[in-house]
Length: 342
Ligand code: ADP
Ligand code: MG
Image 1 (cartoon, rainbow, N blue to C red):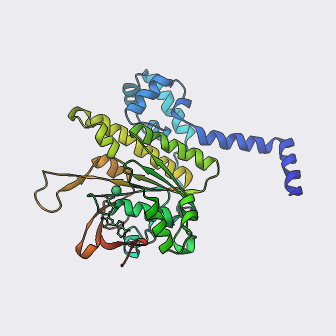
Image 2 (image 1 turned 90 degrees about the vertical axis):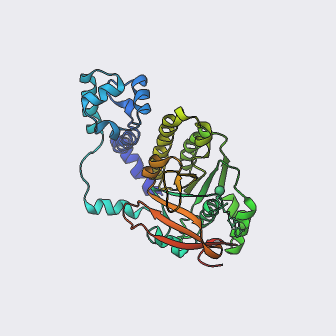
Image 3 (image 1 turned 180 degrees about the vertical axis):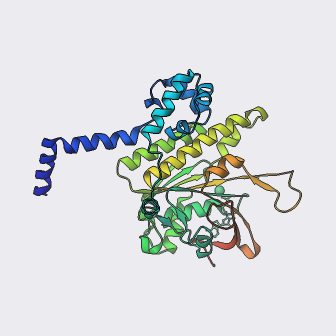
């Protein structure tokens, strides 16, 4: 303790520590608005076009950026150059990459089958896992189960953290959480205390709540899981007109982007539920597609389709995963939440 203080003073005297601190802060907070020549109007236009960060600028050409932002081409070129300088666009070694992967924590779903479908140990931090399916397919049950399992020690498949539950449909049930906790031999009240529940009343509120999670993490809450149940219900209800689809998709796109950013920044697992709609274009098989379509699908790291199976079982099918084969598995919902058998 004492020696640490001495070294602190030393560093302060040499100015080393403050220098380091400032540099770290700068790296963290570089935004589009920090680029030369880019003011609030341009930022707004860029956001409207789905560009929210330096990477989005760095990959553009001067002409393209000029058209999107309304800036002159020379200004645009300078901004692009600055963005490329500000972010290290270079390569990282496989070793560095694997070091980053080590930070990733897994949260068990409660079902070994489902865990294996998702790559081995359940859902991951720094990723978005989406479950879509019909009413009653088990999407909420999985969310509640994860909110409990997150709290378990690593050796039991947890992430030793707390959960945030963003409830848009009013389906969060404390009694059910208590039941799951009891069945797992946990203290139900303690488990409930580690789940922060917020009822999102509309899509704007839902969006704001993500910033709130960031603040909570900064305040020291060890949040490892954010559940958004349902991701799309408000968006679907608020943008129901034919002409509103583009606006809805744009807003959803931005929301997914923010979720991913939060997941990566704070090493949090994000689990979102999504509804299905009838797809009249599909003649055979299951005539349902996820709301939000490709916007949500592309932003989700893992996407699975849930449906009821035989004898009270549930079937989960993995869809378009970058590193796992498309696959199907079976699980159940019991007293202890999602599980392999009841
Ligand atoms: P979704 O969110 O996809 O609409 P849910 O996750 O709410 O669906 O799933 C509801 C189903 O979960 C119920 O129909 C029932 O089969 C099952 N379920 C809910 N609670 C329990 C429980 N305590 N024990 C066993 N199964 C349950
Ligand atoms: Mg539900």
